[in-house]
Structure formats: structure tokens, C-alpha cells
Amino acid sequence: MRTKLKEVSGIDWFDGAVMNCKWTGPLLKDVLEKAGVKVEKEKWNDAHVAFSCFQTPTQDDEYYGASIPLSRAMDANSSIIIALEMNDKPLPPNHGAPVRVVTPGIAGARSVKWLDRITVQMCESSSYYQQHDYKILPPEADCKEKAEEWWGRVSALQDMPINSVIGVPKTGSTVHRDENGTIEVKGYALPSGSDGPITRVEVSADGGETWMDAELDQSHEDKDADLKWAWTLWKARVKVEKGKDLTIYSKATDGSGNTQQKSVEWNFRGVGYNAWGETSGIEVV
Ligand SMILES: Nc1nc2c(c(=O)[nH]1)N[C@H]1C(S)=C(S)[C@@H](COP(=O)(O)O)O[C@H]1N2
Ligand SMILES: [Mo]
Image 1: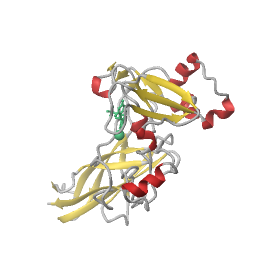
Image 2: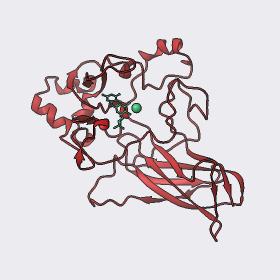
Image 3: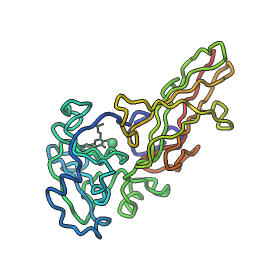
Image 4: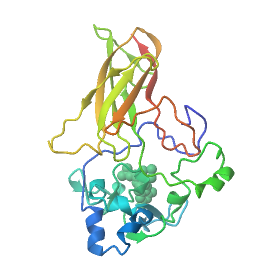
């Protein structure tokens, strides 16, 4: 959003702010049921599960915290877990050892690492990161002072929007055409929230006039694996002319028909950016 639209108050994540691996641990739902949830079912939509880590202060708060709706947590299909393992090994320290939350489809900010406490409560987490960060503010909130007026009025980002990224070729690189005049384009795609899996990825080398289908790699060592929450790696061979300054776009669609738009509206923190995937300044030789 910073490079395409205008300056934001955020970090340069580029295309890499994503995690996709195998997480193992009990369902949050089962843990909450064992502990006993006192909120009546009719109120689950208004209740929240808050996660806290008190082990270190953060940049903007005394602790790290986040929350998600209780209704989402109590839905077994939401696959929200208290993770103990990552890729079949105990969690490594930087990914939250010994225990963290994993909230598939939901912004990573809610997957609290080094978990100390889980609370069922009638308000969202009071953490700075739930209240004053990770929200898609309206464009008029264009500075810190104006953002102050909006934090309390905009809901916290939960489900992430559908997205796709072109990993190869990298922006600014030189690529060789094969004998058919094509080049290989590869990347990943993520579904929107719980609307996965990815069902289609298209690629365009003419500014979005025409699109061709990419080949989806949805194979998995575990045949019954549910790719609802996973990324889908994709690749395509795209016919291109020789020349400088080629731009290629990618566009994903998921199980509920969500798809990407050419551009998205700017927001102060630069979060939720999901315009078409793009690689540009490609020299084709
Ligand atoms: N305790 C704690 N948990 C945290 C954070 C944090 O700063 N402290 N950062 C969150 C954010 S913003 C993200 S994107 C993910 C990153 O998880 P990862 O390091 O396993 O990729 O952790 C989340 N959990
Ligand atoms: Mo994050």
C-alpha cells in the first residue's frame, strides 16, 4: 500500500507476511468446554475469547493480547487450536514455545504466542494491538490525530481477505523465454477467512485485459488434508513478447467466489492490502 498508493504507518512487509505450516494441538473449543464456558449460547456472538502474553512488554503496551469472537472459537469447523507443535516438532521459541494460539483464516495478530492466559469475556481484548492497530480505518483517517477519532469506531480486523502473490519472476528481474515464447510465473494464493480452499488463480501479462488459468498445486502428503486454511502454490507458463518493463498480474478466487480487485482503498496502517498480485519491471530476453 505504501509503494502503490501512498505512505502508511506500518512496516514494509512486501509479499512475505504469511505463514503456512502444519500446526498441532487441542481445539480451543475443547479446552474451553473442559474449563466451562459460563456465557449462554445466545450471547456467544457478543462475547470474546481473549488471549494474553505477559512475558515481555511490547512496543506499545505492557503485554501482548488479542481476542476473537466466542462464536468463532466454539465452532469446531473454525479449527482454532492451542498449538503445541509446528511441523511435527515442539514449537520453536520464536514461534511461541511452549504454547500459542493459531487462528486459521484470521489475522496473524490474533495468534498470540507464548500464551499465558485465556479469558472468556464480554468485551474485546484491551490490548493496544486489538484496539489501536490491525484495523482498516477509512481513508479520511490519514494521520495519527485523525486515526485517534476512528480506532474506537472501526471493528478489529479478524478474517483476512483473499490474496495472491507472484514470487517468480521477482520485480526487476531478467527472464529468458523458452522456445514457445513463454516464461514461468509462480506464486501462492490464500483464501478469504473461512472461505477456502482456493479454487482458481489467473494470470495476466496484458494489464488485466486477458487472463489465463494457472495450475494449482493442491497435492498433499496427507490425502485427506483439508486445504481450507492452507495456501495454494500455483504456476503458469505465460506467453510474452521480448522487451523491457513487463508487468504480470495474478488474481485468485476461493470456494465462496471471493476474488481480488485491481486496486484497493488506502488505509492508515496499510493493512488488508489484497489488490491483484503483481511483478513488474521484468525484462524478457
Ligand atoms: N505474545 C505475542 N504474540 C504474538 C505477537 C507478539 O508480538 N507477541 N505478534 C503477533 C503477530 S502481529 C503475528 S503476525 C504473529 C506472527 O507469528 P509468527 O512469528 O509465528 O509468524 O504472532 C502474533 N502473536
Ligand atoms: Mo503481524
